[in-house]
Image (tube, rainbow, N blue to C red):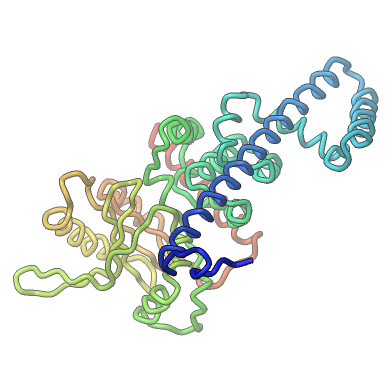
Length: 352
């Protein structure tokens, strides 16, 4: 039944405002209840998995382990219905095994549901698993987004993945303890721009136009925290006009970010162009509370040796490829693993 303003004596605008406030109160309470229930369930599953696992480990016989899990599953299913199958119990046991620290589980479960954890549990690499858990917590990914990030091999596409394990662990621990994102966590390579639906042949302006049409999708792909500021930002030096392709701001990095779009392969002269823009922004646009601007060059190909010789990282410049057509998962995996191996070998050589 809908109240009419004539029945309440309230003006239509006042009634709408009241209803809006009441709906907001109800929705917020429902969300809080759902979040609380989900957190309690997740913690329950962690405790159940640990308890069953300890019982199984008490006996070293494999047949005993299978027998106890099957028996517990039958009894719990009789008492509580679905949700306690052998498969579910084994997943809870895995949960307790790969997330042994109850305090860490308690911290991340405020943002991660049990379904989030079921996506994380199959990831065998502990550092990679912790990366996804912490990024999911900090950037508040829903289950669908987490699945998409895992499927698109986000970890392997970050600069972080190309570092030694000790440095990766230190970055992930910093993210966990301080909620602080670093450029190595933010920038990726490659970026997937298949949603732009570009033809086989296109110009730089076509690429830029397509990004503006699909700006929301573009911002989702490059990562949480980016805010769009300007397209073709004009800067004037000695009465000469120059134009920055895309200017963004990253809230967590607290920096202006310049994105330059290139149709072909990366060329050494691109560095000079971008450094020029970054220095202008640093002098005329950067606010006192902000850190120095950084740049991202998006291109269709690059020579790793050129990038290493130019020492782009010291200039605050990242170079990444963009793909307008997605390769098969096998091809992508091979490409990314080769890039990681190359970077790690280079680091080992530098140590020597």
